[in-house]
Structure formats: structure tokens, C-alpha cells
Length: 287
Length: 318
Image (cartoon, rainbow over all chains, first blue to last red; front, side, top):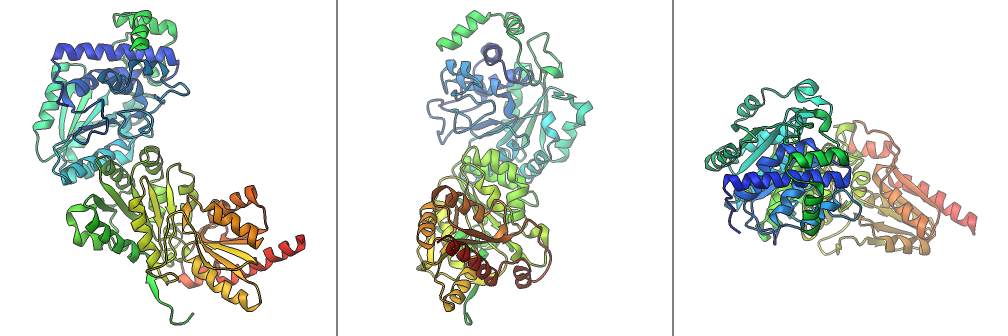
């Protein structure tokens, strides 16, 4: 399948749909993470509907690009992307975190079509990306590798082992994206365990760093294109985002990292996103 | 036993990787700054473009291997067993086993016989860790030839496989033509009075014990349980029924090792007297391999003593 290259206005619509899916899944499950999935929604929409090459009817298609989440806990956005892209029916999202459903709390390769690698223990994804990038280069394959990380996750030491290796091997087919929403479970990242200056750290590791407003679709698309054009170094896109973006009472509040909205809060959130529980849950149920 | 051939198990691994490299262009080898002691330098010389030096970063190496498998490679990574099993345990659990990725792990320097490097480098927990991870499989070959065959067999298996080998030259107890079937134990010596179930270098100690026991009229069946997971349960049950007493022997901690695994089967299917030759819940220490095996109670003499005990228990029941 060729890349989708959706125009920016359609990407914005997809991001909105993804946010609605996220809230609807969380209301239904009454379990799961709200803040991170909402902050990732815009660049995830661009990754799935502009940038990446894949075949939802054949998740193991050998020609595909490889993209996955090192931050396993943002499954609401991950599963929404996959379902909106056609890897499985939208109705499966209504079984998120439920016994018997394939949408596990954290991504499971063996359960969910389109999940490249299981994750949930933080700090592993960038190393997986290094391996996929090295293997692709051995085959002179043109595929690109995308790894989505969190900012709090940068506290894991293994990230920096992988950062060293990616630069050592000059993996220009690797594009990492950091959801830089400044918050983690215990509070704001800079209070819990500061990671700044993060851009300087990656530059010092010989990475190409692109800093963008992670909610500006034009900037996101441009950042992907710049990463694609760069030769000789891996790229990290530091996507400055707002935890809980799109839902007023969640925005920039670390306490929304790891909990779902109550049904009442969820209804309000859906209203802010321009829909209702009745409308959007019916879309998922029938999708 | 004079005149017996001694060879490195890790050399079996290293030479098998070269053979695999010739047979399958997707075989890739990774190492964490231990290319010569894990003997993957043999592969590196032959296939430099398929060899990845990862430096001193075992967690990264294990997960790089995971990523290689996503794009169709068959990665084999090598480091000391202490680091492969413990340092990278989380990566084995989540990225590799939970995804059932086709990653092969070579854990060198297993057991007390590692010698002078001391406790940190004497891996003795790998069976407990690998057996508890769903989708993981595990082989502990007894000698050079078996390590060569086990490494080849691992490439044929889909999913993660851990192979443990030692540091020292060990007596060769099999030959090129001894069959190796993954998951199927080898009976090295038949006997009906007691079964000695061993793995790794302890197969040699078990054979030596059986020879001595035969002189006092006790016929021991010696089982080489080279595959620790999946365990050859049929062979164990048959041994329990036919021999009525079992001693296990391993260069591993007593808790969660071969003995525990065998006891689980025996207790469920056909309880018989059992005892265990293993490391008794303590860290290793520096010394010569031979003196450590003796000091830690991992010799044929220790097996013989335990055999005496289980045979007494067995006859006490009759």
C-alpha cells in the first residue's frame, strides 16, 4: 500500500476522531490512561495517515514501515490509530482492557493486529527500533522505523544505551518521536527527575533534533519530511505537547496521566470534542 | 576416564553459528564486548556485515535483537549468562517473550565451574528465570558436540531460545553422531535401580557416578536432560516408574533449577524418593573450576551419596 498523504485538514479531522475514540474507550473501560494518549493524538494521526507505509489487511507485509510505542501505556491512542487505519474493527475498541478482548491494557503483539512489539515496561522501544533499523539497512531495504517515546521515559537508562547505538550506527532510517508533555504520574517531569536540556542531550549523542509544537499539524508533517530527508544520523522529533490536550479539565494536569474520566466527566469531554457519548459509542459499536 | 577428550562447549556454539551463517543469510550475531570469550569472533571474521557489536549494554543488545527479528532476521546474541539472564531479564520478558520474537540467546560462563572470576560471573539462576518466562525455551548442552547441535536446533525453532554453555573445557560425552532432538532427553546409560537426571557438565559427573555405582551392584540410568524447557516429561515419568528413585544433578541454584522442574513432574505423576545435587542457595566464589565443583558438592561422589540415600528410602518403602 502507498502512503496515504492526507492533507492537513483531513489529518486534523483524524486527530479529532482519535481523541473521541480515546475518551469513549476510557468511559467504556473505566480504566486506562487519559493524559498521554490525548497529547499524542496529533502526531499519531499524521504518522498513520500521512507518513507511514503499511497494509492494514496484511500487518506482516514485508514492505511495511515499522512503527510502535515504547510508551506502552498510551494504548487508547495506539488502538484508535490501528482501528481508524483499518487493522481491526472499531467495535473492538469498546472491549479495551476487558477480559476476552484483544485490546490489552498494554500492547501485546500476539493479541492485537498491527502491534509490532509488546511494550509496557518503559525504556525498551528505542532499542527495538535500533534493531529494526540495522536489519533493514543490512537488506538495503528502504523502510523507515518510528518509535514513540514519552518524556518521563527518558529517565530510563536503557534509552541512552539505544541513543548511543543509533548514532554509532548512523541510523538515518530511524525516527524517534518524544511526546514531550512535561508530566508523569508523580507530577511534572522537571520536579520528579529533570530531563532538560533534552534537545542538547540528544545533540550531544549525535542525533538530529527537530523541536516542534506537537499539536500543530503543519509542523508535524514538516518534521517527518525533514527526518526523511536527513542522511547519516537518526532523528528525534521533540513534540512539545500538552498532557490531556483537547479536554479542558485534563490539560496540563499530571493527575490525568493514569486514570480514566468518570462517565460524567467523559460526557463533558466528548462535548468539548464536538460529539456525544451516544453518537460516538454508536459509531464504534457499529464500526 | 583417562584419555578422554576435553573441549569447549562455547566453541560448539561459535562453530555452529558460522555454519548457520553459511546456510541462512538471515542469521545475525550480536555481542556485548565479549566477542572472543563467547567465541562469536569466529562468525564476525566470516560475516562482518552480519555481526553487530553492541558494546557494554546488554539490555540494549537484547532488545536490538528483538528489533532485528521484526524485519525477518534470526538474531543470536551472546554475553555471559549472568548478564543475559539477569541484566536483560525485563527485555527478555516484555519485548522478546511476550511478543514471542525469534531471538536466540547464548549465555556463556554458566555455573560454578567458571572459576576464578567469582560469584558475579558464575551464572547459576538461568534455569529458574528462563523456565518461568512463557514462550521461552532452554537448552543446556553437555559438551562440545551437543552445543554445536543445540545451536543449530535453536535456529529451527520459532521463538526465543536460551542456550547455556560454560567457560572451561569439559569432557566430551557424546559424538558427532549422537542424536540431538530438541525437547527429548538422551539416555546415556541404562539401568533400573536409580535414575540420575543431569544437564550440562554434570552429565559427565553422572556417568562417572554410574560407573562407580555399577561396581557396587547398583545400575543407574543416566539421563541427559539437555532441554530444560520444554521438559521431556515422558522420560522423567518412565524413569520414576522403572527406577523408583531419582537424583538430579545441575550446576545451578537448588531453587528453581532442574531438580525443581523434575520434582514437579514426579510429584504430580508418579512420586518416588528424590534428592538433588545442586548449589545450595549460596553465591559462588573464586577458585579453580575443579576445586569449586568439589567444594560446592557437585562431584560424582556427591551424586553417589545422594543415590545411596534415595535407594535406602526406596527400599524402606518396599
